[in-house]
Length: 212
Image 1: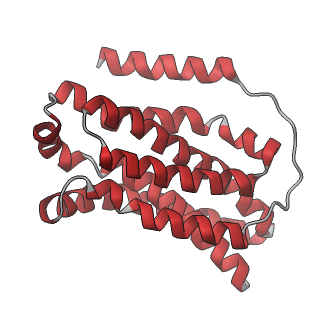
Image 2: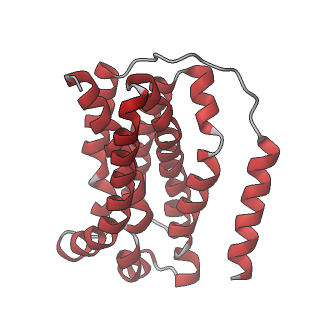
């Protein structure tokens, strides 16, 4: 593995880690956020749910956007959009604002994760991809676990807004590194977006949450 491949792997793993981290980092901050934003739990729980739903739905479609417009470009846009969404979440003055900005954050995370495997396939030989896919998957799993602990520590010692602000410098760093090191190498295949599938998935998940 050369230096460029190592940095690409680091970026892909970082993107998976960040996206997963923010799916759980809000959990222990909810009581403090309820008080600060004057919201009830039934409303504020959507800060978690909208992020998970949006990542799940968008990730099924945005890989095709990478095929059309460039995987590296979409990954970099996702990184900076994730950072922007995080900053806006930290600046939120109401629960509804926070829920809306979490959707922006999720869109950025989806752009990154939906193009991660394709970028890995472009940069690594078939015999190397098992290690690469395993490493990025490990980043996702570690992020999901670390989010709960990080959310509790940051909320207790710094403040709940910093569970979002902390993403901003990391996203800026990732965006700059992506501009320098990521290039489109694979063959682009033009495919139509499965709008009906995405809508069906969204309705199904929303109905399941409502029934729960």
